[in-house]
Amino acid sequence: MAKRTLDSFFKPISPPTPKRPKPESTDNNQSSSSSSPKLYTHPTYPIAIPELPSHIEIALIHGTPAREAKSITNQPHLDLLQFQPYITRPTANELFKFLRQSLPFYRVQYEIKRGGIETTINTPRYTTVFGVDDTSLFVSPQPQNPTINSTSNATNLDLHLINTSTKTPIASAKYQYSPRPIPPCLETLRQSVEKATGARYNFCLVNYYASGEDSISFHSDDERFLGSQPNIASLSLGGEREFHMKHKPISESGSMNLNGSTNKTIASTPAAAAESDASSKLNGSTSGPAFLSSSPGTGTGTQPLKMGLLSGDMIVMRGDTQANWLHSIPKRRGRGGDAVRGRINITFRKAIIPAGTNNYYHYNVGTGPVYRWDEKRGVMDLMQPPVST
Ligand SMILES: O=C(O)CCC(=O)C(=O)O
Image (cartoon, rainbow, N blue to C red; front, side):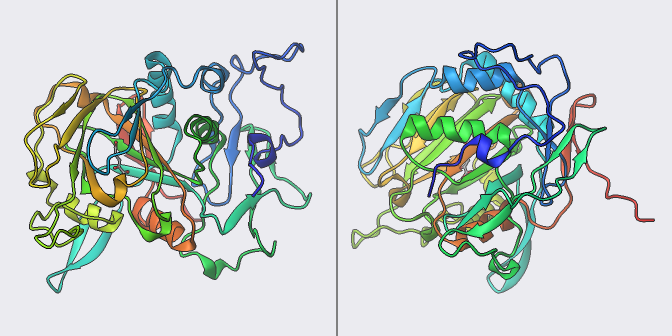
């Protein structure tokens, strides 16, 4: 598949807007930083999503990685890259604020059957997702009447899903939810992370942890739709939180015990991870400074890890890591501390089949209402549904 670029996705649509300058540019284009940002719309977006302020975009394109990665492979099956940081702290903090107020978020609820009883699960964090698996591609349509909302400066991202092998429009039956193209503000990051890690990604999953009460329980991202040895790059923005890792239990026969653990918070699928979110209050965590530490083993001859993740840090999990290790962001006790600043996590992943697309939209968008950040009140606000006339 040809590498997608921002330009091929989001062609400027007349009326022409001033091009944003790149550092190497020698032309006389005006900076758009003083004018209102271009907004991108798409039939699948519940809101228009603004482009990055040009100084942040330039910093991401030309300033990443801010530091070279450290490789962590000192335990069985563990293969991590740690960027401390990937994006400089000031830029990461600005990007955090920008994304928090620009993206639509969801608080997904879903039903599971536990012991034969239907239970409603409330995902304990805000989520959103963009992208489509490798069997499909977002491409620009044949030239047609683009809709321009000149008053709101909105550009219609009138993109269609095309099956890459046959180039025929995908029947809507292919997906349970309509996949959303990665907006330019995340596409810049995706491309930067691809370059730094040498891996390919077609999804951006975004978590927003509003406070220390928000969390994700122990799980691994080892679903079949990611293929073997998936590479997952996980970027932190905003408040510091602790990232915990532990080896999966090994049964007496010596084989990996993926789901049969007595620890109810262990899961190996997003669904199961969220399921265990219901019981993740068990996962209390102490707050602490940024560090990489270990504590006594788990019976597997390995040491659990605790990493303090600061704004701009990125962990890349690769090789055998997902097949063998679990990770979590535990709840953080106490009212004070950095967690109250809120934290955004973005994971870049590559799903190879439609099951990945269905899974990611089901558990990160779902069918519930949209939330948007209210800067004045400092809270996520429910978006009112449009009034029907
Ligand atoms: O927030 C994080 O750092 C971890 C997120 C995560 O594990 C996930 O989205 O699967």
